[in-house]
Image (cartoon, rainbow, N blue to C red):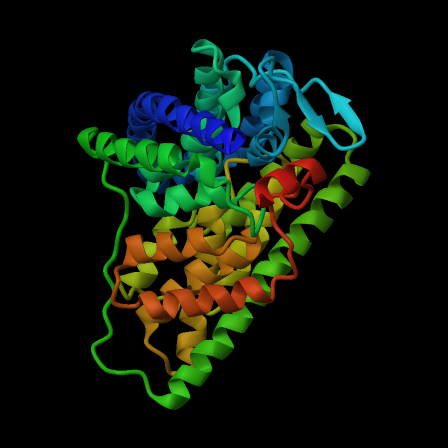
Length: 428
């Protein structure tokens, strides 16, 4: 009994300390997410207006980004996989991460990590690389959480603070606090949630959400409602579509893994590779409907939801350009490009099966994202917070089906590599 109360006391102490620090993390990440979100809106608008002047420099920008990483902080090039490595390791007071059968010094998040990631992401989106933004902000959140554990000498709570930082970052950037919370809890290990971090993550996420609003940043939200009921045949086609969304998410992961392996094998000089392939890709992006597939893809989602004309092959084009850009080194994130692929696919399926366009666009967004990232709760809550509660049941059903058939594959390649000792600890 004494041991039980001692354990409860230790866990309660961690929750109280981390909750207090989570407020500071939320304040920082709310400001960073809000201001970065506003900056990216300006960058995307500038590129759309002057794409003929900016997009041709994609290859040159790729060289500059790789140079910055290699000569300032090589480890900073890693994204969410680095956060997973830190999160799923056993971090002691000295910051050492231990894994089964091998021990290594992981060190600390690199200095200047946040500044480097934000600068590189802004530059790659300025020149039209088909990549995302959430990966950058989420890893910056992880780094801020790690910095705070060092600054306040609480390294034993590094995992909880890292998760709180990721939750705050995603919440502030997309203004979806519940989605941010469950993404942070879920992205490292599918099917395992580190509930010890739940309360600090909630505090950090909602603090960041309100601060990003104070920064006058307003993320894209679009309420979808169903005017008429869904018939039995339509429901069948919706469920069939969810299977297609799951398969496309799985194919995206497979294609990205294959492309990265092939590129690493064939291209030894990364500077030359990104310069040549980046320049060729830039030319193709300009030729394909005047840069329609440049950037995160959020503009494409907005156009589809507002009923503007679209091409049935939009999803395939965005799929290919995203694979190429991420493979050659433009690693801002995968979430928004994946969601735009799903949205375009949903639009095509709605035309094919005669289903409500807005509903299918939203289901494509969240279901392909769920499948490709091997997460379930995060896309459900992000979908509900972004698109409204009227279609919550359809969002949940589509995500469950897509998640179930993705084959436990993920764009976050380290997600499945869980140290056995950590698995046992989390399970208990």
